[in-house]
Amino acid sequence: MKILIVDDSSTMRRIIKNTLSKIGFTDTEEAEDGSQALKKMEGIQLVITDWNMPNMDGLTLVKALRSNPSFQATPIIMVTTEAAKDDIVEAIKNGVNSYVVKPFTAEILKQKIEQVVGTC
Ligand SMILES: [Mg+2]
View 1 (cartoon, rainbow, N blue to C red):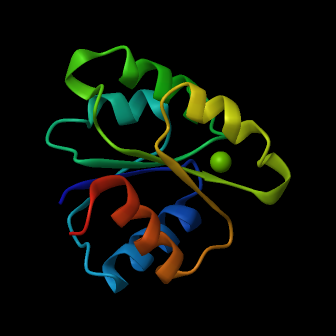
View 2 (view 1 turned 90 degrees about the vertical axis):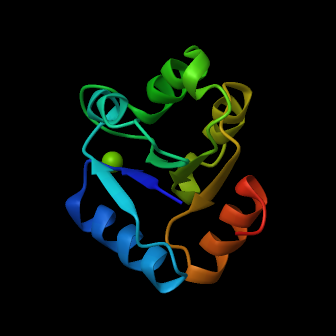
């Protein structure tokens, strides 16, 4: 399964990438913001995105993906912080399938992925 990691922090992208590889997902792509993510969607089967990013934030990315017939059903997991947890309601309303709160364990990420894409 090809996964797109979207985060403006290279440290966070590395953490997510390492966590994914720990649970068996090694086919990953990275993008620094929503607009870069939109250009890298070819073949992507799961999007894991940050909320706060320059240029195009996570919520705007979610809206853009959901308004495109090609990506209407692509699973999206939002990475958020405890403080921003309330925002997740809005994200889910706009088409996010699930979310993880930073910091998260490999086990939690695995559960969320299984929840949104089925057992893989
Ligand atoms: Mg960020």
